[in-house]
Image (tube, rainbow over all chains, first blue to last red; front, side, top):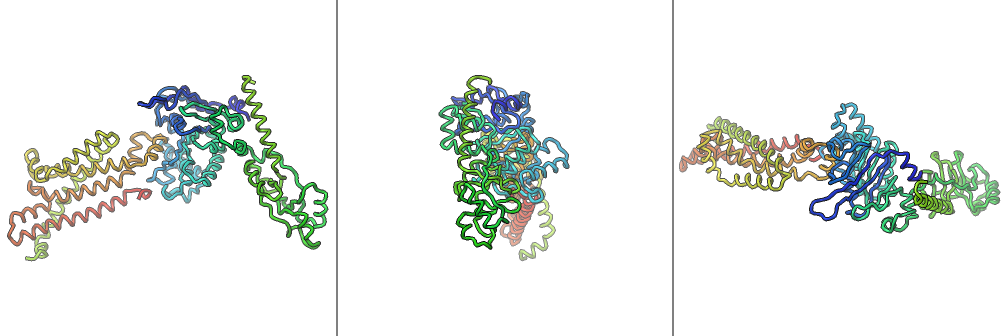
Length: 397
Length: 214
């Protein structure tokens, strides 16, 4: 999918027109005449150095910060001057410090907006359970607990659940995973992407971490100092065709490696590899390996799942009476189609035969991926990005 | 007559004065709480108003109680009315101060989240800020109660209710053996009330504060 396609097919959910924020006593505007369209169902990440106006921009959408001038159009409706409290009930809001109400139970926290909207008790209770399940928190265990009884990661899950309470069309997230340890953050990001694939909200996500932006964003808006929009595009485009030196520098080194986070093992065809079943005799296995172009065999079990690697030495050492089940080494580098190429690369670097086994959801072997294939994939990504960038120079294709 | 014998012969007086003492303090604390919390809520967000209210209620507390009771004698006469008015004025400062401290101590992130959820000003105050500030406010009310229990004893000079009657009668008979017993009994009565009120506040605080912030 290219950015041009999605612009045409998707509806604009949030439109910012000449949005400006001026704080009294400051020379420069915190946000200065910003125009930005945010498509329905997309995650748009606002990213940039501190003081670039990304947070101010986000907080003007639900008018936690009132704009000095300009307009905010939400789903076609000008909400710049409407009742702010009513507006906020339609927009979910997640902040870094979570801001859970400490005197209320988890259930009461999540029920905040449904109660404000006047939902009856049974509908509210059902919604709370649904949302707690959605963020992987068992309602039976957590409904009656208080925020202080939860870990930081759990609190942020509840923060997300609470923001989704009134089933808003738009979600604003201000560095939601910024205060969480890296391992938990990674898990929460993945979980959140899974939730988003179910709920398909329009999301404005603020972060200062470009890696998080690349991982989370359908589209990334890179802000420069002084609220200038340096580039607004898909992560692929930003990584392959940065608009200027500022963007290139902001992405930092290793842009190619970062790109590997955007492609999945499922996108490339795994290469076949000589394979034998565990029930094969040692002699037959030797024969297969002799005729194969590779230096080892993959042994698969009855269900086609990888069981072991066997090398020629191991086959030679094995006595005639022994079985393939008993010799060889357990494969470690195994990935699923949903893994990123970055994961695959990580696995294969340490692997014995410099390949990663690809298995499907049931664990059945699909083939292998090697470094050549990953390299090809990077090259074709770059080529298509360059073509696209050239096409955009020539106006509408 | 020993002190214990004295208490025995005057036990019905002890109980009667105790009830009066508790009632006038209870009423004044209630009024001071209502007025004090209102003043705190009205001013906590504005630095100047806040400073002014704290200065005024603090200044009231420095007026010698003896003087204030006598000043109120003219407009309000004797007995309960001037006593309740004076006690209420004295009781404001701890309540106002703790209300302001409690409300200003609410985590800004919690307030921002509440605002972002669409709670209006009134809902934020009633559902979020006051419940979170409550443990601090009730501590102020408790301090007020202890202060007023002591000051009430002075109210006897304008015929106010409570144990002050024992103490001032004792003062009038200084030198006689009963004087010491009277003053001791008055002081003991106030101390017992202080302990009882403390237990009451501990229980109320425990019962009215969310488990999430205890």
